[in-house]
Image 1 (cartoon, rainbow, N blue to C red):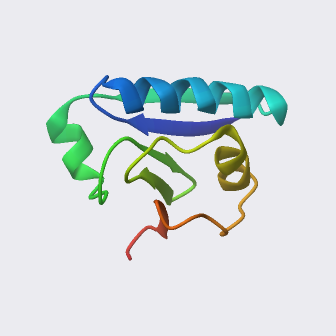
Image 2: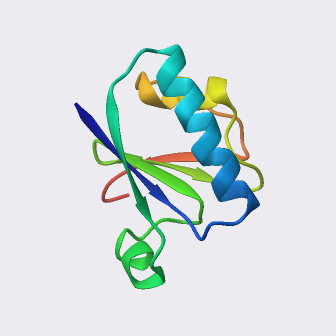
Length: 94
């Protein structure tokens, strides 16, 4: 089972990302544990460029101006590196 961390502050984009993540997992029939990280100090420890963000397998998907779509999240879950400019994907250590 995969573990996916959802970093955010429970705002509209965070809730939309959570909903889109659930839909993408269902679409791809992926069984994953979703851990929500909402404490500011814990979020800062991930050194993400922005929130909300998803962290999975040492990769981070950051929503810069909008929550990623279900399709974009599916690409992230499948390991694709093709994202529009408003979405940033980076590996740990970058």
